Image 1 (cartoon, rainbow, N blue to C red):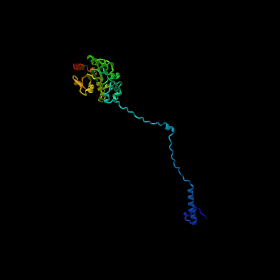
Image 2: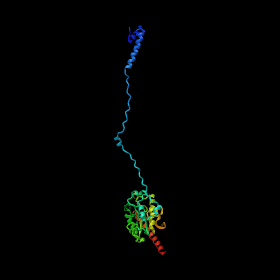
Image 3: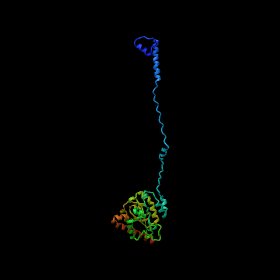
Length: 293
């Protein structure tokens, strides 16, 4: 009798002997059935995740992306004329050089450069400080109230600047002994009428030196401390320098107060008049020497 694998196992558990071969066959058969059952059952496998491809940028996105263009920074070097070149200029060249000068930052805010006005060979030369608001607007030194006061001071000495409407190449037939040439130490207006800085005075100094050389004055009136600094290279106050005759390149120089200062300090007008009298006396003495020789 053939026992099934289950029956063989049950009989063995009950202590009953069965045919050994049949038992072995039954056990082997049971193992084979178990293996075949496992092989028939499909293994549950999870498919490997496939990496998603990265989307390439679309043509529209490429077109919309901004293109960065680097623009080179243009740096304009200051326009500065050499001292030797200035020393060789005539009136026309000097005026053009001053008008186009950008050597210091004052050029950035100016309306006009303030060149000078008067007879190109005047015996008298007046040197002021820096242009104010009205000078910057008109391009002429000593205008407005300070200019009116200066004109009155000059008129008291029989002098005038108005021989040629401000053109340095004007009527050369006018008597130079009765004429004045007026210039400033600085040719551009400092912002807010502040004091000119040392570097600004230094940049303009060669222009002033050339103006003095072209005019060849017989006497110079230096009005204000910055005019004094440019011509005498002195930082002493006006009160210490006035009342005596100084020399600039062999030319007598008289120090006095600036008309704008006199408008604010009326009590100083008497001292300014004394300075004008000293200048007139000095000029008369020079003229007498020339006449006698």
